[in-house]
Amino acid sequence: MADSARRRAKQPNSKHCFVCGVENHQGLQLAFYHDESGTVYAEATVPDQFQGYPGTVHGGIVAALLDEVATRAAMVEDPNDFKVTASMTLRYRKKVPTGERLKMIGWIEREGGSALKAAAEIRLSDGSLGAEVKVLLVDYPEPFVEGGELDRLGWKVYPD
Image (cartoon, rainbow, N blue to C red; front, side, top):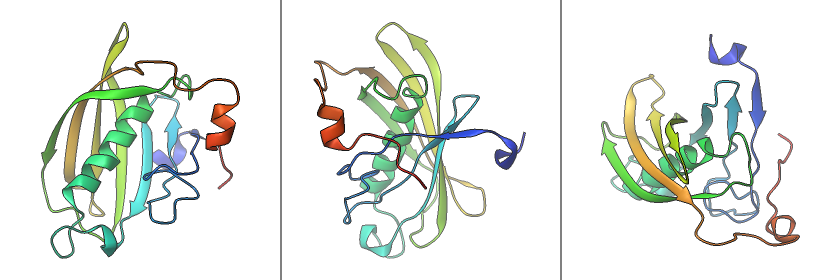
């Protein structure tokens, strides 16, 4: 089924996250969506201020994008079930350019107990693979939020 034909649901954003924070004007302010298969995706054009080598997205930014989309795959069923990355294996396949539309895609590969394995990739504007990651996600080590803390952090679905 083509991406455009799949039903999608928007995921929450926070106020200040570097990747998704709607009020973080120094960040990327990405919106994330998932479809009925549990695949999470986002699109972005990374500006030159986040380059490493000229015209190339800094490797740390590539890692942050992939970590975010992989982690969000674990939140499809419950957006308040926060996981953290215990380990990450990242492979840079091609130059990831600034100023071009990128597509990030994430999915769960294996669930089990308090840990799960997820994967994600960045597709370049021509559809080729720019980078990919495998992550081990674990439960947040202590209660992440209490009471109205999520409201204070701005963790909610914002309209497009």
